[in-house]
Length: 462
Image (cartoon, rainbow, N blue to C red; front, side, top):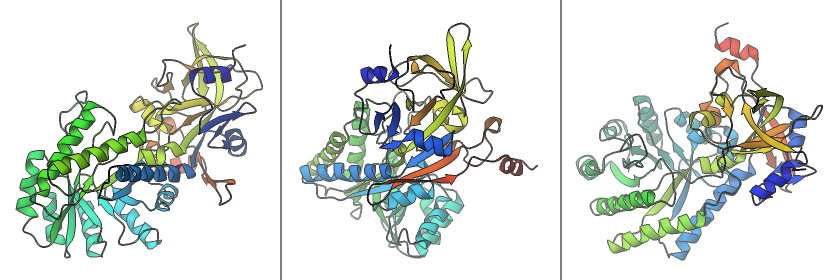
């Protein structure tokens, strides 16, 4: 008999650091998922908080090692990109690890205010303000600066943005400039819609910053949509960015920080082989070499990791409601949730996640497709990142099958409209927070119950 556990062990180097099986039940970071399901039911989203701290500390170690190996003189600063998950339990966990904050839009600033009022951050915390900014966003940033948040740094996204700050900020302040990098050749546009053109950066500095005693240029910001990957495209764009930093540093002596953005990938399949330490080494090596070549002081390095911080802490668990055989060969397992509403990246971006059975690992398996509850024909999941098919244990009468999607912690709640109205009025699932105490014992609690019909009716005006 071909068992599901045999398939997984033949396909992957299994068990892994995060996944193991005991008594035919899947454990995620040491957490018995069937026990969680038995207590809370499905559909269920969970966040395993220790993973957030683990990834932050790993990134600090990787860059610290790289700087030590290459005798790099600058410092490293880890910022958390709040847009990947704004939930308080995520931000609180990240801040326990000494991270700083990167914001993306207007209402990130009231979030910053709340963190300050609760003593989670101080006025010395670095607040990097990114994005194309409407007036209210610029107003909130100006108010932070005027209130003494000395390390709040608006990153200029266009050549006129600074005019607002020069008019409304009454204290000396620092700014950054985002570069509009060229997109990957396969992208729909040649140049990013965000940031200032390479040819306009020095002009912007000399005309609006250089001779103004109230403002200084602190950082140059760089971001590639496809992320930090070992490709000719990435290294080419990074080299171009470093060259612009070197060129700008010659006229902007106060410039001392290079923000290399976010984009460190997370594991989307069990045999993920990204070498984080190698990439950190190569980034630091390239920056140091080009600065030395141009007699430029090595800059401080700042990153804005979002998905990397929180993505691998998340999972979504489902029950299989029923199986349906369509056109004699397509076998469907129907889940008690929706991919469109609860894992929108799997629908909108064809994002693949790690998908594994939670129980019945000793049963025979077969090829199936997974169907969601909405009436939309696109509400399905039928392939994985490493192959065109998905396999799960065969259904047996009176033996409930559960499945899990893993590393789903970034973006899915906000993209899915958490707490609002979703397609076919599919409710937001319950959300459970899992942590460990000082002795390493697992504890968990319900953060939010499944969305109720009364909440939806109120939103809809009934």
